[in-house]
Image (spheres, rainbow, N blue to C red):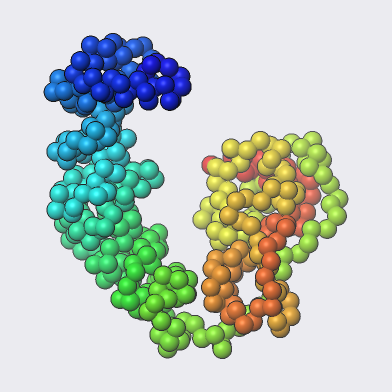
Length: 420
């Protein structure tokens, strides 16, 4: 029954074998020898229910050279409701990232006094480039972020907020503990850390749900602050969101960050694409020159970042073309409305004073935050807007609107194919 492809039949077989307890061990041992690893795994799920010997066998798998079996054994014991805390402490040092992720998630409901030492071990080996590991660590740290942060900082961080390692920096972002507000401010204000680290510190601060964090963000908006631009964006976004309960509008007004009565709103409209004088096929018929395309692609930096230049208004181009067919790449330049990237859909705000703003909607609170061509972000009080609608065309201008002919589009496409 365990070998049956029907899940309901396997369920019946599992429960029957479980009911026999230790008497099932010889039959389950045969299942464990099955050449199909998925079938063999069904036996491992049964072992914890088959008496002391069954438990001993599954515990032996915790030291198996195969990391998949180590994970399976750990999951099997957890499912059978064994106390796996001491096992988690040992597996926190495991060489396999997937095993460590399972250990992290297993600590979700474990009290801080028991979970924190294990989470510190996991932090020592945390791969901050692996989003799944980051997410798993966050799940394990839930409802005990301050305690985890204090322990991790004491163990991994050097003296001073400016000396954080990339691992500590990313853990701080993930946990955004309330007791780290002043440390986030120190990093966001420091000229001794990179711009990327300052930006991350401001973002981390924006996730802290406290009035102290809200007021600290407003201070970072001051003239001369190296993080003023990022801080203003987050302060305005959180004003009507996470920090709405703290009513910081007056503080923002006093600080000169936002006063609805003084806001100047400018109409910015994406021009409608005219009738094309060349087609995608015309471009595909030509051979592109990547060197010429690199120079021509500078016309794209009003919306895309290329080699660090330009706003990150449009999708990331680095490596994008290498994942597309040449046909898809050319289509995106010649007829951008044919396929709009997810998350980059446009919105039109009709202004009571006349005109409209086309752009990417960042926040639909009051004020509305919208970013338009060139990365221009505006704060639009809702009482200035007469209507709002989703755009049915792309915010991106076509190659022809940028002054490119068919050969030049082929050159740009050739450059983007090499831009990795």
